[in-house]
Image (tube, rainbow, N blue to C red):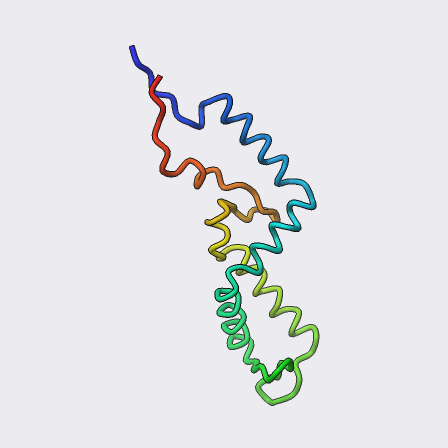
Length: 124
């Protein structure tokens, strides 16, 4: 009789997932992935930055960021806006799907749902 074995039940696949998690947990890998996801795609980063500037009621003139009243924004205000941009990129960036990543608990991890998506069950 034939049995259906899901990819996620395969012992070799489980070992591969474990090895991938360990590799992604390394701090150098995390910092590299963080940089890639928060800066790509550049067009989307620009869009998110413009949206956050508008939400904060800031305008950008050259390199200066100005408040509604025309005064320069404080460094704390700029840092808060940049943190919001970074958080959005970590949760919305197309690079997450492209690299099959998910941002969870402050870390970028492999998204095994995306890895398994589209794969058929193996027949044994």
